[in-house]
Image (cartoon, rainbow, N blue to C red):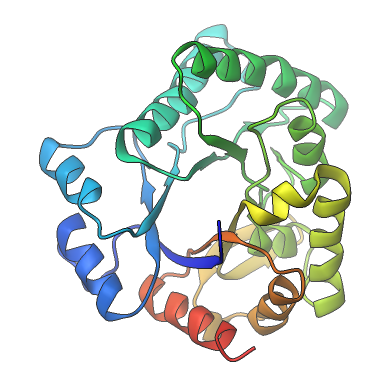
Length: 271
């Protein structure tokens, strides 16, 4: 990566399909989009053709929401592993830079126990991808609810065990999970400093992050908001990303995706 790229989470609302989406992103001077495999990893041949002919736009993939690598039932664990693998396989097919997904719920287990299981189950995923000659960044996402496995510390620990696993840092989720903390320049810098110190410059030079306005309670994330209706301090986040010279993909998940993505990129360009 040679710069920080600004991506919409899915097709912009002003576009009718993927072919139109990349044209609209061009018109708005945005850098790409995250392909959202919300209910399963499926796409038509026409969609494939449109994504492959994307005028050098960057794409990332978000795996299905039905992933829980800490499920109690073995069949659900195996189905979750397959969904991560299928997301990565689609990434290889479509030329994605990176994939991300919500990895697990605690289900009454300790952080340490679930992290151990995440290492074991990601080893299956990574070994399978190596056997299939698929080379792509695999990134569990920092989660917004306290019932979900996926603190920054947990995902950093997982990442230390694999050469192609790194965090997808959802700054809004961290803010919500911590009930309003991690919303200042110094706090954002502390996140990036921790990543750099523990995982190296490669993690800041090949970054994948999410950002949005967000509503939250003392239990964490409730729902995404547009920046204008949220307390999320995106300006200080962008200043921190600039100060650390972070390169990679920053995906905006606000409900008005292309508007807030444009707000992010335009403000970043002034720094």
